[in-house]
Length: 304
Image (cartoon, rainbow, N blue to C red; front, side):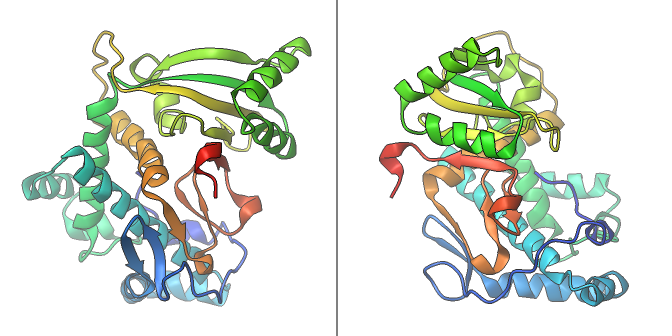
């Protein structure tokens, strides 16, 4: 789950402005997840609250024509909250009001938890509930989730996209690409098995465990490093065995957040173009296709 955003941080990260289009197939929807519609009005209502709460910071954003960045961040948070709720329904997960209140109390109470940020005292409980649900989702699967992947690497975004598209053609093409890259000295491996509990950094920092079999993922494990990983998920098991990990809640929360990519993939997620495009790797809205952190290419039998 993303950390509490701060308005002032947006001042240093201007994005391209995207306005106009009314959105997914249902008018007035900021996003659609499965059968659930998130209204644009909910994003606007939250923005109005933030502008009242943080007038100086939002005025500066407005002067610099960066309010769209704020809108993207708010829409993204609402999508993540709905994904967490969707996962909770599917997985029979629950958190109590007492757990939510305890987390907020540890943050200093509603006022301290929302000071200087995009969250308000009216919605901070929804945000914290989603964080706790992500933690419980991570707890449920961390010790028993494993994937088998074919992977290779690239040093440019264009090459990563080319290799991802080649892998997405099918398992034979993925195997051939791995073999060809290995012959030229590129680090590439076929049939690599990874258990989340044995690979905590990969589990917490990458989407490898949050994708359907047949999916191809391309991303930079270290953002802006110029080192791309391109992986095809060959197999995904929730019955892996091994010693208990003893992972802490912070790691489980991040792992659970990554698993929401699997939730989004199975439920279907459509973002209104007014907020840009959905970055299915970072699970956030991005200004445009060229500004996502990578790609998630659906299995061939699920592509329209």
